[in-house]
Each structure stands twice: as C-alpha cells, then as structure tokens.
Length: 214
Image (cartoon, rainbow, N blue to C red; front, side):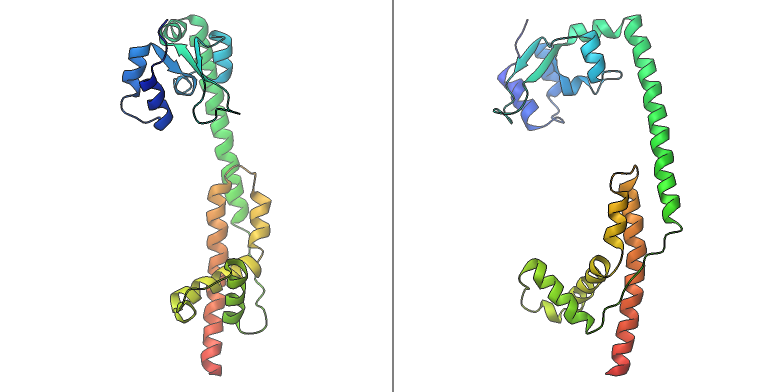
C-alpha cells in the first residue's frame, strides 16, 4: 500500500483548504481521518465500527511530543464500506440523529433569547466624576495611556461605556449565567446591546448634567 508522501503531509500541515488536497489523496490512495469525517456518515464511532485500525499512521508534525499520530485510511476501503447496506442504514440513522440534535439546539437557543427579551439590566451610577473613574479603571487594566487619548472624545466615550458596562452593571454576572448554554454566542450580542443601550442613556444624562453644572 502506498505511503503518504512528504508533499501530502505538507499540504495537510499547512491548510485543510489547500486546492491540491484532493489531488494528493488521489496520488496516495489515502485519506486523513479529519478529512474522512467530512464525508456524510463518517463519525468517530463509524470509523471504529466499519474501518477499525488505520491503514497508515504518521507522526503529527505540529505536536511531535504530545499529539496523537495522524491516521490515514485507504480510500478504496472507505468507498467499499460506503456501498454496503449496513453503512447506508447507519448513515441515514446518523443523519436523523443530527437533524434531531440540530432542532433541539435551535429550540434551546430560541428559549434563551426569549428569556432575554424580558431581562432588564441594572446599572449603578457611581458618585464622582465619571470620566475620571473610567480613566482610572482603564489605567489600572492597561497600565498606560497614549498621549492625547484623555482629550479624545471618541476614546473617552468608549472607555466610559466600557467602565459602566463591566464595573457598574450586572453585565458580567449575566454573561456568566449563560456561559455554557446553547445559543450563548447570539445571546451575548443581545446582552451587550441591552446593557449598551442602558449605558448610552446614562452617559447622555451625565453629559447633560455636566453641561448644566458647567
């Protein structure tokens, strides 16, 4: 059986999207496990059940000390398995499971967004000069500030908003509460938008009060 060539390994190492990857597979007659799992029905369980041990292994050039070896399977074996009734039935069942899992995940994500529709972020406006407090908070985290930044209205507006969101609201607490829930990435955007709306309103009131006082 043909061994994977160095060129083939270089292609695998540099980019899975390399346009020559299929050409290299055709030359060697081998497909790497991660590429195999992109074919319909091929999961880790399916590979173990229908193919068993790999036809070829090779040291992973990225993780020579700790990484598991790269596993290659003969494409001819893969294609033979894909024609069997057992694999066809397995693939259909696997696809049904995937669709059910997708629907469940979608429903959970929608439920999370529905919960957020009734959530009202809380914001505590601290006593004292808001800009000074925001600058102090920024310097504590970054340890320095570029020359002129303290006089840049856009920069000041941004750090005041960040200060209010992260240190004066329940933003961080809310993010922690959804951290491992399905749909948290979309929920994060919703939470940030709701809190930002609240902080923007607070900044406008602060500026109006400052103008009146000044």
